[in-house]
Length: 299
Image (cartoon, rainbow, N blue to C red; front, top):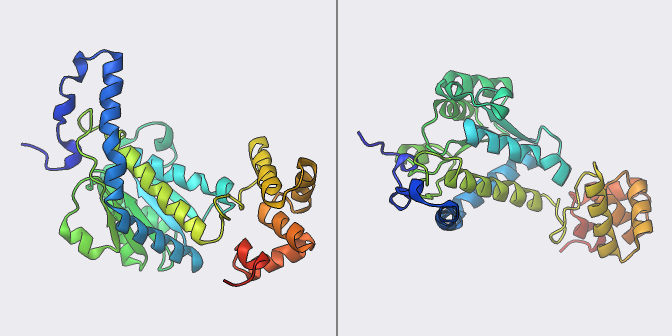
């Protein structure tokens, strides 16, 4: 019996991949990958809706919580883990939950995805409530662990969504706040959703969190002004941002960063308004974290 899920369909274009040389394999995979961005673009309105739900959660003291299994779960954890160094967020603000727990990040725990009650338990353990936005990620659309988590989050009053790479059932679309379904087509290796479906998932998650951070004032222009200076690379990036925006040299940029405890936003306001770090932080807080509102006034 043929599996109805798009992620399990055979790909006619790659049915003879085992007969190709190395360059032929690379060209075939690359050709198939070209359809991913277009498929994600078809879901632009749903992705924007998810972005708004995440922003709303953040503005009301809630969290964005990804729930997935296997590749989907790992991508959710990855996106969540990148928020603190990139945007200076509290680690609890964006959370990633994966079936099987920490061990599943480094070693497959395939059976862990089969138990919806474990997904519901994970939601309960996080204390999910009406201020949170829970996004289930399951490229096949059928993972029991993820559905258990999403159903429990919905019962607790949270906003809920689902990201999948197969046509969603109408019932799911009707009862959730948002469903994102980029249809990237059959995988080069049948059922290997770490490939096209995984790439589409990464694109969608990047867009949701990046967009929400922009909307929260954690980006000025296109610069990550809320980054955490936790290593030499980020120290250098922070100094370059200050040098570019304030037209100062590297020595002064490093000094400003030291005075601002490594916070680029604070350093920018200090220099622009000629105030100390405490006053700069106060004005930023009053302006909701938006640099432009501090140095340029209301728009």
